[in-house]
Length: 549
Image 1 (spheres, rainbow, N blue to C red):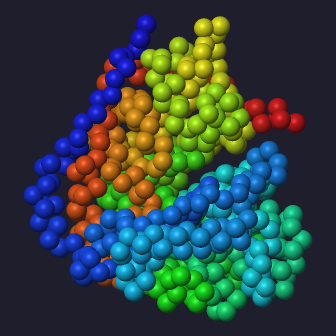
Image 2 (tube, rainbow, N blue to C red):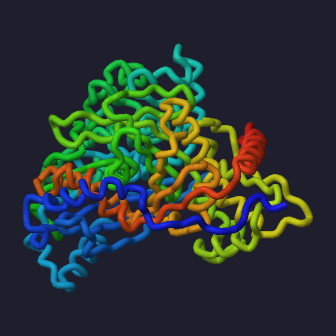
Image 3 (cartoon, one colour):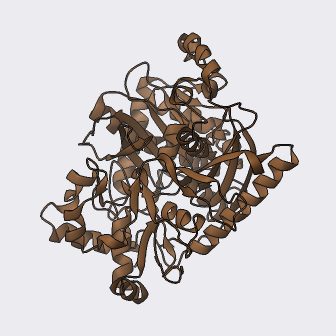
């Protein structure tokens, strides 16, 4: 029996019509400068690709370039990047994007006012400040090699898995940078020796790129921002500085850590040798925080970025909300040195779009990621098939590092279309799990007015967006510009140099007016049954990590 009719409940966004009068007034106050003669650049350094996008004074993209870079998988569960290849990818993107914009008649060489940077978070590296050379590949956020270190610390420390949560808002997990650094110290002789010589610099990707952009060996700045720092497990959420007691307990020397700055301030100027030499770097945010800003999420509002993983953040304003349902407490953004800090609750799903890539590259059921929507649309339900993509464990709200991927409920009737649809449902179910936890912690999600803002590459899949609306029971908004991460970085940089104002960023409704809203059509009864099946499937994924040995 079909659970619901196969159709999309898609409408032009009228969700904000009641605010249009206020927004139209703000349109006359967009910028401090003529929008035709100012440009802001945004470096978006992601997990699988790098891009550079140039925006005009109305935050409209006028030039961009994107390149993919190499993913290294030395062992099962290990993921690495070459730090020098990442730097080179940024150079290529900047050069190509500026050339394209110039060819289209935009005077970006003289009118580029600032650069914003956004990056994959938690990915960790250590390099020599005397040679500038990385001492090991960057260990990527989804890498699980630190599982044994996590288990050891949980046993040794009095607070167990939550030992550091009071200061940093995070559990002990392979996800966070501090554990990746400990692995480097314990397993890479060059790292250990360089620290002893006081020649080591620690950083996430933002820190590495800013150091390179501002001169490297010739005076490069060693800094990070509050959002990236909040993902290391080392920053105190209240003081916004490195937590001395945490550093002491983990044996991490403070001198290797970068200076922490806000998300919107002039950090330093780009050094010679780059196409935009002399332009100030004026904004820096971790990718999910940048997407929050790009989606203009105010207090009580949430967004989900669908990429390699799925990342759901809800702005909790100036309140630090401690989750009792498996979520992370983190910084949302701090838009200036003297600005108030906005905090957030976050749930991270490591495998979202990556599940579609697995279906393409490993299982061979599709030849391109775009094919999954057409294939999954051939059936109106999964016929009981459940797919749990716990390839590297389960993150929020489950936090099971021993989980591994499972596909259950298969019968002789099962076709590849059912599996394809189950893969899409798995993405939406994981997002729902996080939203349910947010509702329990804040009471904000079950309101009829709650709207999930969606962005990221996977949102082009209409079926996925409709499944998401059906499984959550709430509307989902996909804005016209789904690349909100780079947009958020541009907003931060533009704010710091006076190109944008906060009224424009948060109150203008440009990005919403032409968005698409997907509204739920599934019955509550059908939704409840599907959720029960999903939860049962999740439990079947537990305690499977040892099977690989």
